[in-house]
Length: 132
Image 1 (cartoon, rainbow, N blue to C red):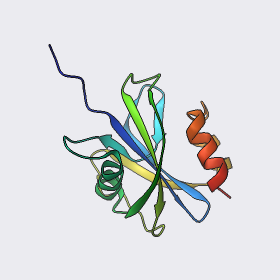
Image 2 (cartoon, rainbow, N blue to C red):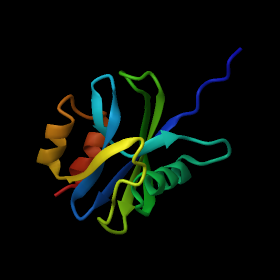
Image 3 (spheres, rainbow, N blue to C red):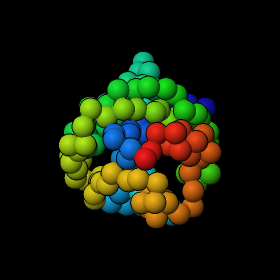
Image 4 (cartoon, rainbow, N blue to C red):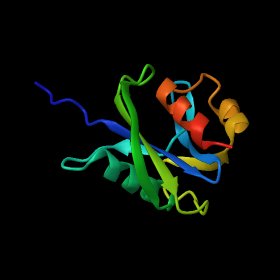
């Protein structure tokens, strides 16, 4: 029997009323813009995965604040864990050039443009409290 695939942990990183999104070079179905994310490694907490993936993908240090929620993603089928994070600054840059094409700091209006299908409700509620 094949062991289950590791969960994907997404860092919902906020700084000064904006949230960080990254655009993958290869879209996953209709998903192009998304939160920095990656597979949880063995022995790693979800919070640590969020910190590590954000640093690896965009060179940004974040502090985990809370677990926002979990679900099986309706497009990818992967188990997702969303971690609310605070970014120390907005000095992010595309570090993982093989995986990412660009990044953007988004307010509510830009977020709606980049993810028109809407967000997982607990993530939307979290961002409703943290975005300007």
